[in-house]
Amino acid sequence: MEDAEEGKEKESEVPKTEEKEEESPEFDRVKALLNQDASSQDVPASIKRLMERQEDNDKRIKKAIKKAKTNPKWFVPVFAALLVIGLAWVVVNYVTSGQYPIPGIKNWNLLIGFGLMLIGFIMTMWWK
Image 1: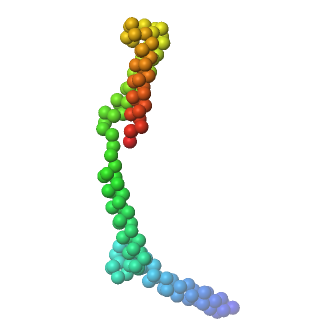
Image 2: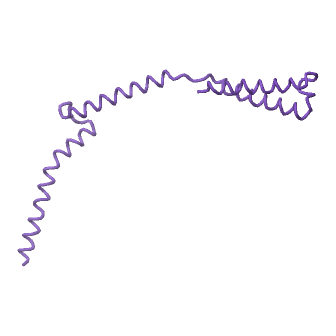
């Protein structure tokens, strides 16, 4: 009985080692490709095309980033300040019943305040 069990164990071990040997060269080739230890002859044509396409995409992305225009550093503070100043102008006008910020022009102060806010809002459309 022990001989039969040992024989079964040996038989079951043999196919496993044969499968490992068959997979090993292919696995080594994949491993070499991933580690870039393989020569250009070992790389399949489909992988070469994929790598070339990836390089082209990287170049296009880098060009697009370089071409992307940004606003100057003063842009955001200016439009934010215009919005806040315009709002403060309108609030002061309402609180003082049209007497301030500029005395004597009464409700034209509203136009000035809303004009400042409008310019700030228009600037936000060009914000990048």
